[in-house]
Structures are given as C-alpha cells and as structure tokens.
Image (cartoon, rainbow, N blue to C red; front, top):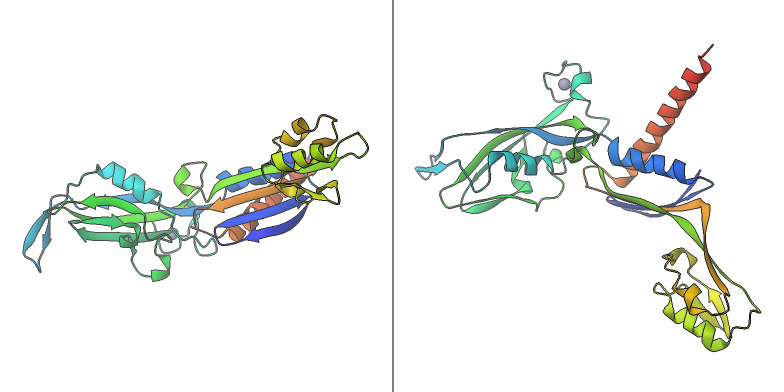
Length: 281
Ligand SMILES: [Zn+2]
C-alpha cells in the first residue's frame, strides 16, 4: 500500500491509498473507528445539597435543569486531549486500577448561576495542557439560584465499549473514478458541451472542440455524463486498487496520530496472526 497525503490538519486528513484493495482499506477504517484508544470522562461525582458561596454569603441549589446522568453523559462526550505515550489503560497500569496520574485525569467544575457551563469550565487538576480541546461546548445551563460542583475522572478506553472513546468521527473512502471519453462515435460539439455542462463537479472541459477529462478525482459517480451523451462516448468506471480516504477526529488527538496508531495496530495484529499460523506444527 502506498499513501499520498492530500490534506493533513490536526482534525482532518485526506489520503490517496494506492496498490491496495477495498478489504485492506476497510480494515484501516474499522481500526480508526473502534480501536484507537482515547481519554474520556468515565466517572462524575456530584456535590449534592446546597452549595455555599462564602464571599456572597449565598446558598445555591445543586439541582439543575438536567438530570445528573445527562450532565455526566455530556461530560463523557467532551474531547479530552490524549497522549498515548503518557497514559495507560487503568487495568494495565502499575497502580493496579486504583487510579494514578499515568492512567487518569481529574477535572473539576465549580460554577454558579445564572450562566451556561461550557467545556472550558471543566478544568483539569494539575497540568493545564490537559484542558478540554474544544472550549465552547455547552454542558448545562444554570438558573439564578443553581450551582454545579463536580469532580470528574477521565480514563483510557476504546469505542468498542462506548462511542465517547471514539477518536475518528467521520471515516470514509471511495474508489478512484476513471472517466473515459471515446473519440469518433459521432458526437457533435453540442453533444459534448452538454456533457461538460451536466456534470455537477465539472470534471470535463471543452478544449479546441474536444471534450477533455480535467478533474477525474472530483467525479461523484452520478453518471449524468453517460446519460447526457446519446452516442455512449463517455463511460465512468472505478479503479479498485486506488482509494480516496477521508477522516476527521474529535480533536482529542491529531489525525496523524490516529492514522499512525491504526497502521501500527493493524501491523501488530497481522504479525501476531502470522506467528500463530507459523507455530502450528
Ligand atoms: Zn494508574
């Protein structure tokens, strides 16, 4: 498999995968969707009863417009920054699952109404670089006499268990389009111009009275060009060895890190499989 990078930003990647097959590309897609580990909030501890603001001498109610379960779920879905070199799965950690800085991050929220609690109010205890990556995600709105005081713990997991541990949010691919124009089938210039015009992504251009394919990659397989030509001069096919691959992440890690982990994970699994096959006497 050869990989060409068309676009690579923190949250988005567009790749062209060459000399491969649909099952191979789909394996990469599935690892990206369900096996890349990330940190997500798993436990939320709410302060119950009244919450006292000593400075104002005022008591607030800890009951808000949302059930605590809903607030916990919303906090669970926040993109927690994840460095896979820094964190381990809790059950594989040297603390034996008790929780330590190598396997968990503790956050706190301390807000008093009236206000909206945003992801930026979910503050890490300790290292400020572990702040939630997207600061403007609303969590809950607090009324004038309401307050939210919680401690939340994030830990490593994968999307096989829950979608909150899903790093890649939109992963898809399609075959390389192959658009061909046959000459000498009796097409008039008007017919060819019509083909160029009906194509929604404008794959064709007219040059010196001839129809040329100029943006083959942009073809969306709508086949409008084939229908527009009565002489069957235009054909749209697929190259099953070359694929356009796209993904987005939830910003908990970069698209580069997610792809790198997925490729290494696939390699590890196939290596293990090869070893077990070779071990068969
Ligand atoms: Zn630990």
